[in-house]
Image (cartoon, rainbow over all chains, first blue to last red; front, top):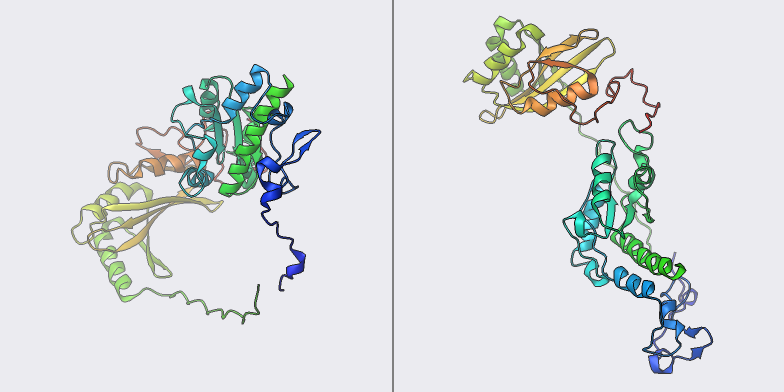
Length: 201
Length: 173
């Protein structure tokens, strides 16, 4: 099975089209030319709103949400094999520091809890305690199928069928375990969610 | 780009030896001689020596296994409990770090009365293994200082390791 070159449409870098000074100003705001379905993300609506580059008009909630989403500090907390993928996501190859994600070994100053692994019933009370110790605003990422719904241990005698039985979850990352790219996608989705929630306030 | 690959040759799996090796036979003879007062039942599973003793003489036999200079089984690798539905079998996997030999020591328990003396005084590493056996199978290790649940949460009902445990009945938490 050879891949025919005609099936692929490579996107060439065109400085006339892609340079930011030459981006056509559309009625909705700044449209990034390479923002395609499945491709790059469109720019945040907050940046598009004023229509003038370098100027942002927003509510204070939105500005706080921008700051919060750009400095998410997850609790250093792993339960099972998903934690290994989470650790490798933090490390240099998939560098989570790029997104402002820095692990913090205390729930008192953490923003995000990444529930990475199987939630057994014996571990459920400590997880709930850690969640209650985190200050508001706080977000939860359920990483992997175990934390989502029990996964391979569904209806087991010792496993909670999803961490959302004990704490509210914002983003579910599927996979068993999810690849680091999947966790990064979950974190990007969480950042978008934080900004969107602020916009709806 | 995938290419046609030749079928991968499947190597024939090595056949497990059905009898003891010479070292195993020597160990079996030595164990039968050293544990003669405890009336052991000698057996073999594949290439491993299996010795079965009664539970009444288990602590003395374990002390002899640990302290006899010919044996010096100073390391209890693993403790497992097996549910045969008419009896329990507690299996101690022992190893001698000095001699490099290993074997399995088995004790059979009646299903209605799963009590066995604790070996935490002989091998302190038996601590958590015995708590796990008590958690999952309900085997009572008499003399253990703290048989609190190790793996299960407080208030768990039943013994999930037993074959009679209703594994499909989810206990809502």
